[in-house]
Length: 114
Length: 109
Image (cartoon, rainbow over all chains, first blue to last red; front, side, top):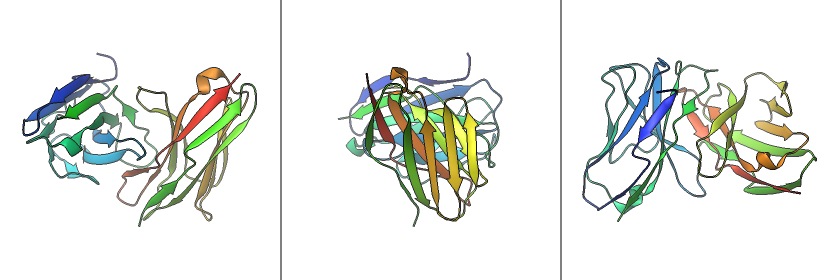
C-alpha cells in the first residue's frame, strides 16, 4: 500500500441496505476524514477522527457512522442507505488536524443508491 | 454563516495566465488551501496560505488578504494538463475545512 486507499471503487446499492466503505492509509497520519462530493457543491465533511480511538461529527453526519480502532483504518458505514446518499465519497488523512497540515485524499468511492 | 465563493467555470488559452478568485466568510480563520482536482480523480494539494501576501511555487502562485476575505490562485504558462477543477477551502475555528464548489478551468489550444 502506498498512501491512502479506498474500497470499493464503485457500488450500486438498494435502498435500505447496509454498506461499509473502507479506507486505509499507511502514512501513519493521526487525522482522518470522510467527505462526500456532489455536483455543484463543495466537499462536505461527514465525520473525522483526530487520533485513533476518537471520532467527531462533521457538517453532514446523519445516516453515517464511523469507527477508528487503529491508526490506519477509518471505515464509514451507512446503516440503511437512502437515495440521497448517492454521491462520491472521499477519505482523506493528514499528519494532524491542526492548521497547516495538508490533507491527502484517497481515489474515492462512487456510490449509487437506488 | 460560512460561505466560500468562487467562479463556476473559466476558460483560458494554452500558454496564457489565469487568475482564479475565492472569497470567504468563515467562523474563525486558520488558513486557506487550494487543491487541484482532475475529472474523476481525487483532489491534490497545491498551496496553503495563512499570512497575507503572495506565495509562489513554480508556475502556480497563491495570494491571501485576510482583511478582505479574499484569495486567488494564479496559473502561469498554462498547459493542457492544467485543465481541472480548482478547489478553495478555508480552515475554520474548529480546524475543519470549509470547501468552495470549485472552479472548472478549461484550457483551449
